[in-house]
Amino acid sequence: MRITLPAYPPFSLPMVIRSHGWIQLAPFAGEEPYETFTYLDRLQSGRVVLLRVEPEGDGVCVTADGDLTEAEQAEVADKVRWMVGLDRDLALFYAVAQDEPKLAHVIAQARGRILRSPTLFEDTVKTILTTNTAWSGTIRMAQALVELYGEPLPGDDTRRAFPTPERLAETDVEDLRQTARLGYRAPYVGELARRVATGDLDLEALKTADLPTPALRQELLAIKGVGGYAVANLLLLLGRPDFIPIDSYAFKMVSNEFYGGAPVGPKEVEAAFARWGEWKGMAYWFWDWS
Image (cartoon, rainbow, N blue to C red; front, side, top):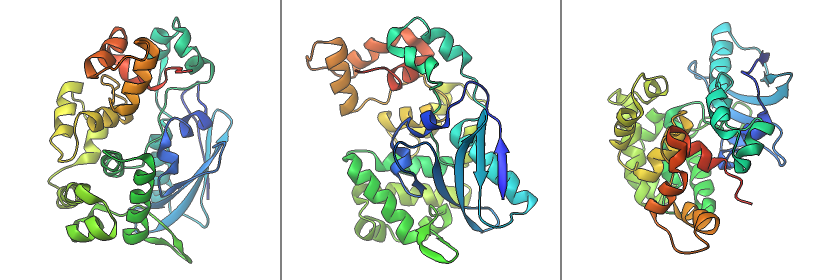
């Protein structure tokens, strides 16, 4: 199967892939310099397929082994559009960034899109896995969830999809804590999975919810395990860059860039990017720290 999908210009698939570390989290896979990527996906039909996403023309080409039904092809197309932001119009961000030398590369290289998982459930779980740990710990925990609870690619048990909410909901919290080694995050992931699996929380509806950003932020903050940093990260992924995902990296970079190496806190980080208003999360994310 082969599907060609156009993008809203300007677009660069390599820039999307390199936008952050998601490419290193299973079931994403890619090799530096990250021009293309693969993703192992479980479709709504229950079928597990390996998707290969490559640049083609002004958009991307998606291929998968074997034939897919029309419904499966439509699902794959919708998911890839979301994952790499094919429909995103960044003209307003480019307009506010054009006079800032530290953001000149954004326009020149067609940056501004951030790689996403096909579901907000997966992105929320992965965001929780980034809290209070080194990046290597996040990679390990994501890999463990996929290896232990994901459905395998037919004919290759070493490749597995991200586990469904239903699969994680039926998993004992202690198993998540000890076997998957999620630590204190285990009950958060377990409860999130149960809420999504039972229909108590429709996370996917939030992707297109017509809510003001503050209201959407409150919906996400109501998820246990999602605090200030995590919610800002999720809002960025949802195309709502009104907040900065402030963590130790932000303190370090902002200190060196704006405060001569002096210790800084959240107020100083916010002040450094306050002039960007609703785009401050994007300005921070794509700032040329060099």
